[in-house]
Image (cartoon, protein in one colour):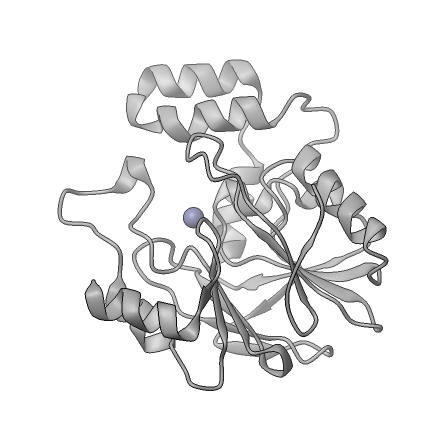
Length: 235
Ligand SMILES: [Zn+2]
């Protein structure tokens, strides 16, 4: 798979439309001072595919890796991005330290699903995503922020929180008119969801802005501004 150019200096490595694959879109913001990768990929194998695509496209080597939130499918590839600074919201640190201390293995995943069948969807996808645990590690961010942070490349990360994940962060590339939303407006993950939980359309609507041309959610096709507005008006 190759990178798809979205706008300006933003490129996308499209996710897998099969919901059982749990493979989100990874974004690359090209910059001569070092590119910014937005989300790590769901596994070291996924991260290596994106790295190969970045090299094949001739884009500058990544220097920063931004987490939109701490969920596994956005961070488990981090250990396959050597030499980057990992940027994430401060509330992701204790969450990811706890995840890092768990004895991940295929056997552990099976045992956890037996104890809590609601984990099945996520944990079966993890078992498929990771073929070897050698060298695998969950990495907390090394550079954190409370509200907003502008990286030297002009990329702006801003905490929005919400029901999907407490650390949800959106990433704005002002010169390219792109906002990367991660999963911020999606309902909570299946094992934490209640029947009342739906997409947070109010949060999504609050992020629409005339200075932006593209809205990119991690598990959906990118939407131009007019389509995003129409989708939210219709919802
Ligand atoms: Zn998520």
